[in-house]
Amino acid sequence: MRIAVFAGDGIGPEVTSEAVRVLQALDLPGLELVEGDVGGAAYRKHGHPLPAETLDIARSAEAVLFGAVGDFDLDHLERHLRPEQAVLGLRKELGLFANLRPARVFKGLEDLTSLRPEVAQTIDLLIVRELNGDVYFGEKGMRTLEDGRRQGWDMMSYAEDEVRRIAHAGFKAAMTRGKKLCSVDKANVLETSQLWRDVMIEVAAEYPEVELSHMYVDNAAMQLVKNPGAFDVVVTGNLFGDILSDQASMCVGSIGLLASASLAEGTFGLYEPIHGSAPDIAGKGIANPMATILSAAMMLRHSFGMEAEAVRIEDAVAATLAAGIKGGDLGGSAGTKEIGDAVLARL
Ligand code: ATP
Ligand code: MG
Image 1 (tube, protein in one colour):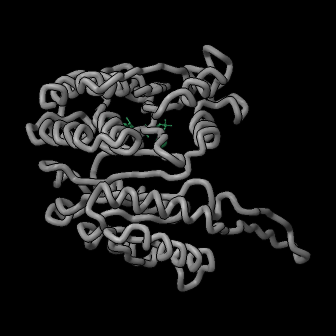
Image 2 (image 1 turned 90 degrees about the vertical axis):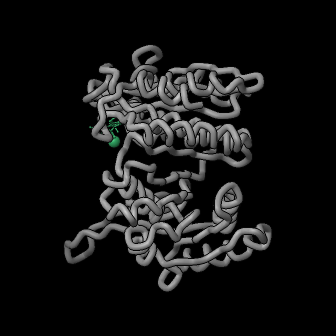
């Protein structure tokens, strides 16, 4: 198994190296880790945030473990040379179209969320968001009308095949979990949503074990805070997913725990914590590596089909938190290495 490791900027290298230690401790068959430069670090070395050699490494691998990119000192650069462009470039070049974000509240952390503890403790869900279509990528424009008013527009559109592949990603993810899929749309007013719903129902026939339900996005936003325990996997479009996944994150409490996956067709995926390069704490050895460690678990599950190993990592993280070993983002005092050691000890 060949894994590309792109640590990037800021706390990226610190948190990534703890996740790498965890992968190495699992005795995975034929594990091969190949490092590549991305972001500001790559710009400084190669003059580009996503050099051709980095893309080649990604393409030669079965999955990418990604740290973070971002560098204030490079903000003056032209847009295409800024560190953040590496993520967009990888998404495009690798055909990553499905973004998966789990949200779960670990034991002992219920008080840190913005919900009542008894509600928070029920959260264990996964949001599957389409990444390449929707209103962000439709025809858009701005014009001045005859009477001088400005008008802007963005066209929301989805083609059947685009919905079909995200539907499969949603159903496949549901098969690895509680086998419940809630498709979120706004089919009472949007044509794209009507198509979305039709395709979801069509694809559901291929996954008879998964229970499919539908919910309007406004209701989904309410239910996420009212009764989040009712959700298992949520599948939705780019715009609704953007909003709902951030909302779900905050139901969990801390940015240092949130993992994500961006999947291509087949088994290839890029896995990264949802936090950024956190320049304010970079180099201090205090960043929480758990989000990256949990991203590595997602990698084993979705790119390598290693469910048991993924659960082993997740259980080790849960046990570490339950033992009261917490990073500064959770009100604790454990450093990056210390957290990595604690997780390793519980593997
Ligand atoms: P970027 O521009 O790269 O997204 P940012 O300034 O938006 O960076 P984030 O990395 O998203 O910052 O982090 C926001 C806040 O959360 C910062 O104060 C940061 O220190 C904190 N933070 C982020 N990740 C972690 C982590 N793994 N452990 C502890 N604190 C974190
Ligand atoms: Mg940020």
